[in-house]
Length: 347
Image 1 (cartoon, rainbow, N blue to C red):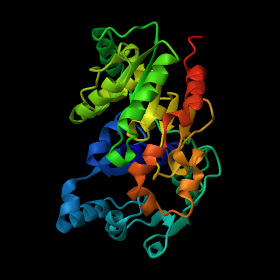
Image 2 (cartoon, helix red, strand yellow):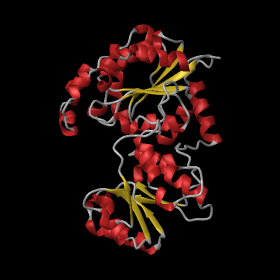
Image 3 (cartoon, rainbow, N blue to C red):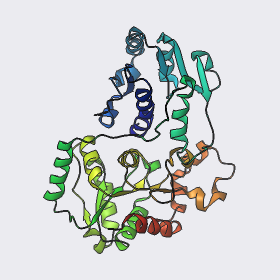
Image 4 (cartoon, rainbow, N blue to C red):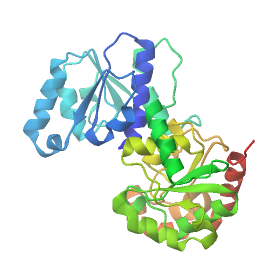
């Protein structure tokens, strides 16, 4: 959800550039709001809460709340069941979304839901920018999501680094240690080998990104790492919340690890990224801003395409754990080393 909300915020950012005086509101899941703090392109954040999922009455109340605002334009970047009722009742003069079978009647403008990227931006970015095309904005669109960190937040993060005695003469790498679920998490013993490779190929501080509830998995990875690697890991250096993580990430120099919200936030902070995709996730969608230097990624399909021949997304998801075992770190070790060389220079 965090990656979706952050990436979709580029719609708001470009609308603000085109219409400086417009009221621009953004409907998001309540847990994702920290990534929007400080974004002046958004006037009001409307929360989609758990009660809206659990109760048809509450969902209808939300739809009526949206209708009362009398919006001129509604852009549906979600285009799923939960948003259809809101669109139907919105009363907006123009309703824009993707052209998908069986739902075009809901919208005044339906844009193609492209299957393949045309640029290095990635489909996640290209699709969202396409939702602005019916408006014929008289601007050059900016495709890069933005995160805003306050001076105070940066100061707190620096104090945390000082408290943990992080060496300031080294670069610092954040490890996106665990995915949002097991099917999006690179095998723990493999991730330890990735961390060892980072340790062996640069004198770097290593931070682990994990939630407190994931501490057992994080500790397992730590224990798998070589003693020489463990000495470089600041295991307990964590943010107290999502804003705390953002500020800590802002003090880091690069990020390596599982695809997910942490990677997307790092990219929004203009940090080099090396992303490991789950076998069932489509790389073409979320491999954003790939340039072969600052942003790189790997997918099992890059190395063993035969495993994916004639397989549906459902089949790949059902076999994700077995496919992960095929995705040994040695397959992309040289690519990771090259990334580290490119982005670990102290020059």
